[in-house]
Length: 158
Image 1 (cartoon, rainbow, N blue to C red):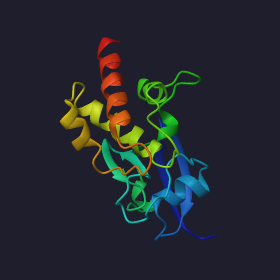
Image 2: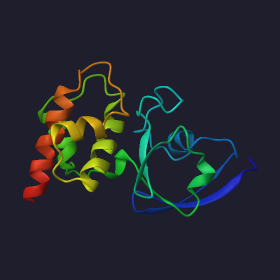
Image 3: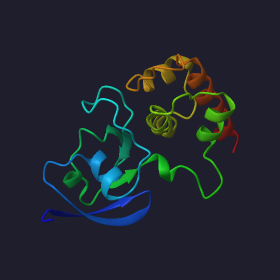
Image 4: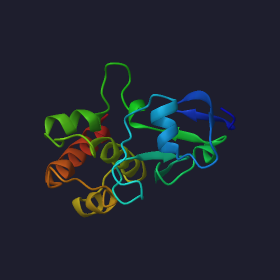
């Protein structure tokens, strides 16, 4: 396959891959690199299920081309845990039952991580606003908001 050679950093690791000029980053992550955490929910950037952090900015990976990752830093849900130790957000999502079917969960986790990196002590309103780009059809959001609040508290204590 002829394609564009890309060198990038994903979850702290140097990565190289070939992709087509019109191939979304989401497809590169899932199909070429085996990072299947980001999900395709809509393909139009409306649901947030494919959220990743690209150079400290939350983006929908279905709207970014794989070739645009050249020389950039990408964080995916796979990079949140450290070995067997879950990130506080992951742990609190479990404790608060803030997930059901799981399609939206990776996007919510990444969006919450981005939010807490920028605002370590958000109000409920700020959490809801910060997660507004992510849609869930199962949980009703309250458990997700409580999980993020609890994780923020734990992370401040650490």
